[in-house]
Image (cartoon, rainbow, N blue to C red; front, side, top):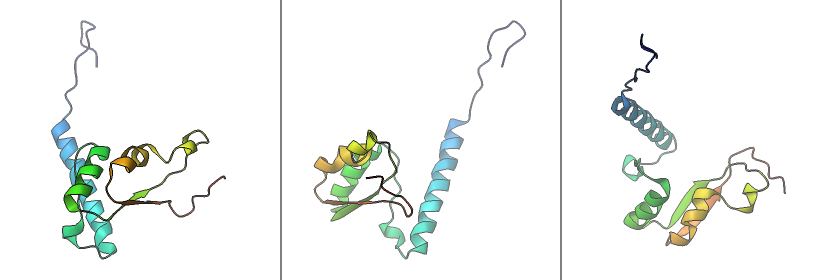
Length: 109
């Protein structure tokens, strides 16, 4: 937005409210999905932070036997690697990892 003198006027965004709304929305969606599939609430964890760090620390804290991660379609160059997140945590996890591709994903190899 421009002021009368041509200077830019900063716009204040309610970041705390936006973040809280997103967190609430995501938590509700995850809990609804877990309920739909019979997963008890105490087994559902919605955490805020860096994904790679949280996967490793949560796996250790929960003494998990397996981590299940989703796969996505990638370009030819990207297919050389498993995926950014999966690849970065594989050697740091003390359990097995299962990568699941979404229904309908067709491999081009």
